[in-house]
Image (cartoon, one colour):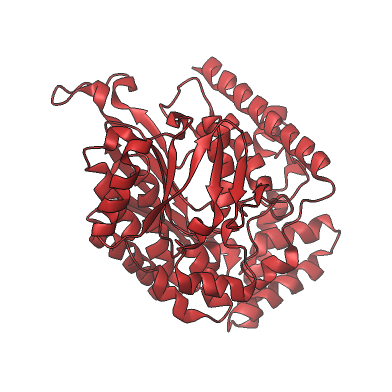
Length: 463
């Protein structure tokens, strides 16, 4: 995929002449398309003119300039590891959560760093309905982005992103009632790619009995981006009466985990390492079935919280959960290892990926000791492996105990486990300039917050 607008602006900044830029854009068109030379030149001139006219150096009005300009951190998304599910990503998401806070608070807000967010119907001003108790109904929502490396495999991409969105509703104790689709394709993508993606989404919709209710289909960057990339996400909405939030976790709770065969990340690892047969291992709805059993049980009140093992793997999830629940955990490596799909585990070991640092799509259950065995037994009846892997304590750290009784504290790395060749080349290590990077990023977030407040005041004064 080629971002022609980004390329043009970058070359303009570097001082390239108009002719040099036009020649480069024309070459990009020829690289991606079988296109007539005159038509390519015509397109290139139009792009150059739009970039020239939209250059912010031509804007003099201060407020307008402030609205349109970006307060840059001068740290790239890639360098900071945003989206890479490690400590660098967590740092930025905490700032995003703070920036997302407004005067109108959610019952479970982004600042909780939980799997999904929630509002209570009783808190929605002006809403009245006497058919149910308002104070009991909670609306849970989730937005799940697609796995970027599955762009060329749209069916499995749609399948896994939809399953992941529903998972995040289930673990909060909610019954999913709606699936919505937001999909963007490069200008040169085949229409069949769109249909294949929707078929993957609809497969989960059918199996989970949750309807698709709305959606949006757009091109990436309109006419300014060429190529066949597919990006976007799935949002889902659910309802519950009792929210299983991480903040409910108590000292002494038992931690259970179900078997995990992975989703989008494991599928990506399999495809790009040439182990295509492993893809089939990931295609199941065991996680959703396990949640249904638990949510319909008579011991639901003894479940404190649930979580899916995704962001940064188990070591990343446990770290985030501890942060929100203000607790520590002690877990047992051998019990965890036994719950990873053996074929998936074998592949990860073969390609040198730490299984504790990647998404396994297993279910974590925090519950009272009294119901631990009952949960394991109930899930076994529907052919889902589950075991107690540890317990909650007040240590404020994640302690991992090995079979030989060795114990060590584990922390998320700067990025999740490198599960593709290119990720291995980039590495997982923390940058030496981390403190400087974080300072500059925090400054950019603060400037964005100031900008928001300034524009709110401007609009209110207009009204």
